[in-house]
Length: 178
Ligand SMILES: Cc1cc2nc3c(=O)[nH]c(=O)nc-3n(C[C@H](O)[C@H](O)[C@H](O)COP(=O)(O)OP(=O)(O)OC[C@H]3O[C@@H](n4cnc5c(N)ncnc54)[C@H](O)[C@@H]3O)c2cc1C
Image (cartoon, rainbow, N blue to C red):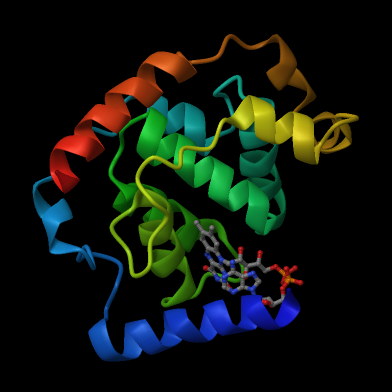
């Protein structure tokens, strides 16, 4: 596992070296016409400051804001919520991580954002949309992580409907890859 993560990191560096910079241009040019909801609306602010009502995402965003670090699993879940459920352009999430991560890296950060969004090299298939509630059950079963970073989140209403936004995202992605 450790070696495969190092291999992934080197793949990011290799891609940035030969095809970068990666933080603006979609590696898969088909995504240049993808209908992101570019606006930095209320959803973006809620995501940034851990007020989405999705405990594991809110905890991760608080951990990031307070310490400059976030676990890899939570980075993937938070990035998936932003791009696939909130429908926001991966570049605004990438820029926020760039500003707040102490390990912000010009290859790994945009490379992994593009991977989550579906437009990257060897990217996650478009139909892979993390369900933050299920991820929380699986990876934080006793709630220790959420209680530590965002206990208030349990009382917040969830800002979007997971099912409906998932269906919208699948439709948009499907139209693109068809
Ligand atoms: C949306 C998103 C953005 C990211 N942005 C960055 C970034 O700006 N800078 C950065 O260094 N990493 C980034 N990563 C990758 C990964 O999250 C971190 O490298 C990892 O969390 C580091 O944790 P750790 O030091 O405990 O390493 P461990 O989990 O103990 O892993 C050991 C080493 O393997 C490498 N590594 C582990 N996981 C990954 C991975 N998925 N991709 C690439 N390398 C990995 C790291 O160099 C790490 O030091 C990002 C991942 C995602 C999903």
